[in-house]
Image (tube, helix red, strand yellow):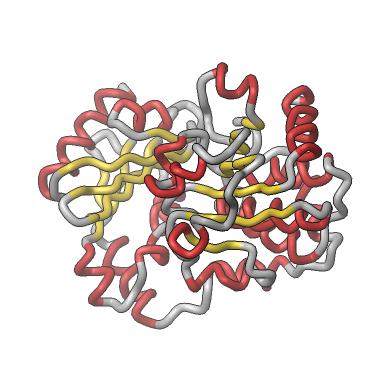
Length: 325
């Protein structure tokens, strides 16, 4: 990874017009990483901006006090020529959106900064380290490598990316290095309770009722190794909640005794998004998701399948049972 960091520093040194983006449906890790990196590059005098496929969700706007994030429609002509195009929290161009991909053609250099598994050929020339608990952890190291002092605004973005992508430090990818980076972020003066509350938001009673309804739908396989929940778009809407509010529901299953794989099936139009979590490292849900057309980490992964809940759930559960046996 030292060689990759050296290449990163050289690319930054010779670039002036720099565009940063993340995947098309960004989470706090992708957003926090691109914001903090953009802030750091601007401190170096670089002409840097974050251009995402879509506008930033309102719930994440507090992470961007300097307004470094814009969207494709509002900024597609921001640069005539891009010296460096950086993609955070994914190493696959199709995931950044059809429109933003066009900006790659205007760029002299492309760099992925990510912690998801990828082919060794990609990892060889990009900043991809799957041992990191979050892309935010890696970005924190890269900012330090540039000689930029982390400030409170960068720290809040990176701390938030790490607590979300580790489910508050619950995942097996969390290491001593993760906490060493977190210690440096906290030294800037950020408040962990405030950071946690800001990203998770203050909920209404309807949110609690939705959790109750969803968790009451919990089912387990006959052997007790697979547990799952499901929810429809109608349920989310009827309780006045947003899809973003439901992402953590699956983590409630991790406390169930004896399970090895937790799943959440969520209706998305005429498709079903399936999130996977593994309770221990004996089952690689990244491989399970890949077998079903998706991907991810060994402890957290997802896929999207055509069909409705009634059809998809039994088919997928049967396949998971076969795979873990």
